[in-house]
Length: 149
Image (cartoon, rainbow, N blue to C red; front, side, top):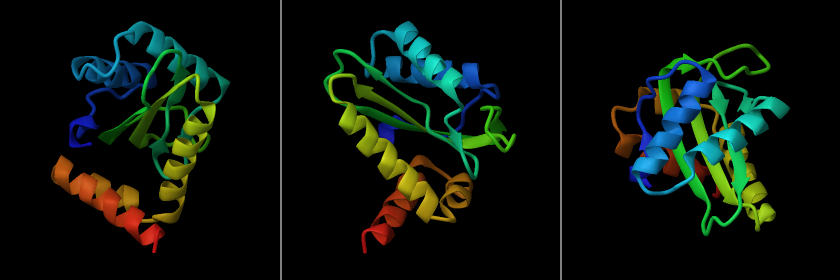
């Protein structure tokens, strides 16, 4: 999982941030159709921002022919304008791309992320203060374990 984290996004606008995350996935050979993925993510954003409370956004979509879901984490200490309902910037991004052939898997992943964000009240603050990717992943693991106790 550590190879699926962008510790600091350069972008400060939604479209640029999505392109930056997609470019990252292309460099990691996780996706081949970057333009298609971008269009699907933007389509989803037009239905309503995927920015949820506390500076978190969960951009997501489904792609046909994908074998396994892709989940990545991106962080912006400066914040990105993700058009959240509260008008505040987003700092933490969980990008989820799921196989179109398995819509229930998509919902399970989104629900797990939303639960983690909702229940782990200090998660965002801790992630933003983390010094490196290993520390970020340790924080997420610790918070997940607390939820499962």
